Length: 145
Image 1 (spheres, rainbow, N blue to C red):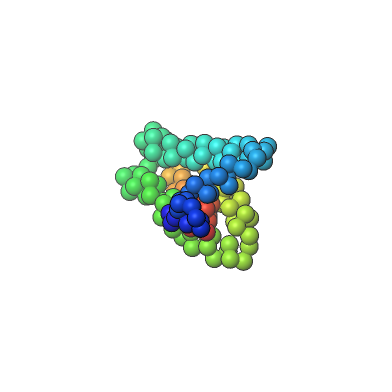
Image 2 (image 1 turned 90 degrees about the vertical axis):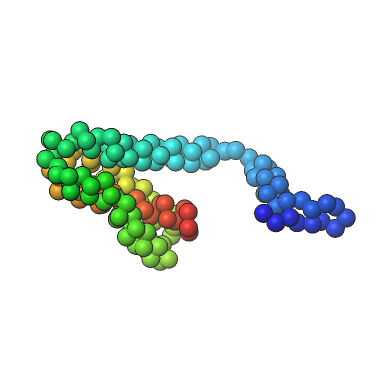
């Protein structure tokens, strides 16, 4: 961070000025709502990762997954996250960022919760692709937007 020099005083780092400004904002119920929603999203994303990583081995026999299917399911969400990033970036220029983020969070949550209901390898691959497609928009918009 750059230092801001005040006439007649020593330079004050910009992060100290920002910290003082943030400390002056009163904590409200809206902040608790944001923390709760983000915690829920983090829980769902953690569930998504555990379903893919840990339980994929257990799903191999019931879903009749081949080695190729397992590899594809493991990377399907990440591959579609790249496509979803481009889509989210394109539509957020026309729609509000808040709406794009809400669509992404709802899409990711919906398809993550569908994972236990799949009956075949093809269904699992499709659900993982759709999860990745929707899951990228909140990530891209908050990190790079």
